[in-house]
Length: 196
Image (tube, rainbow, N blue to C red; front, side):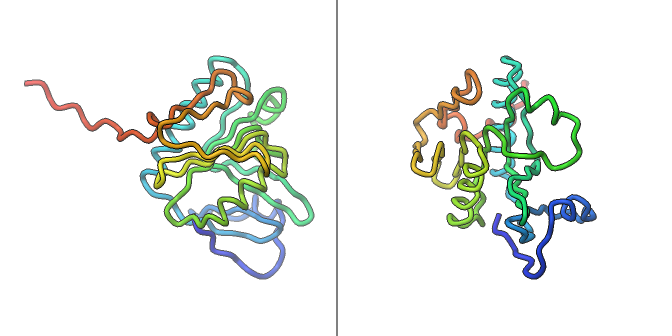
């Protein structure tokens, strides 16, 4: 999602939250409002698949909260930064206090998952991954469907790129969560032909 930057005055997180819903998605990066382009079908399919797999692992362990649909996390103040991952996981006990909170969530998720869109420049993807790490996210997973690879960021100097035949091991954040990339990038099955 290549950002369109609204240059000018500094915007706050409270102002972003109060903005009328106009069908656009926004992030706030150090006071700068950014409009994000809509993503395509493959992006949506991968986000749904990742959220489902994460939800299954979390539900089985009762270990926290899964969020999807670009939830806003307020990760910096003065000037404010509100980032929105494609999928996020927040561990207990923080998750309990956030389940019904209508505001942007304070702090960073334990796991942030970003799916790269065709319009995403590499510099923006890297900036966002580093913002998550700087804010305290334990692991950032960036999934790139064009290259059929995933990049796992555990720190700015601990970055690992995994190919389509490898497995992303996220068990240090979510018990039992491993993502076989071959399954993730496989073509979804088509409709079942009618029986005659």
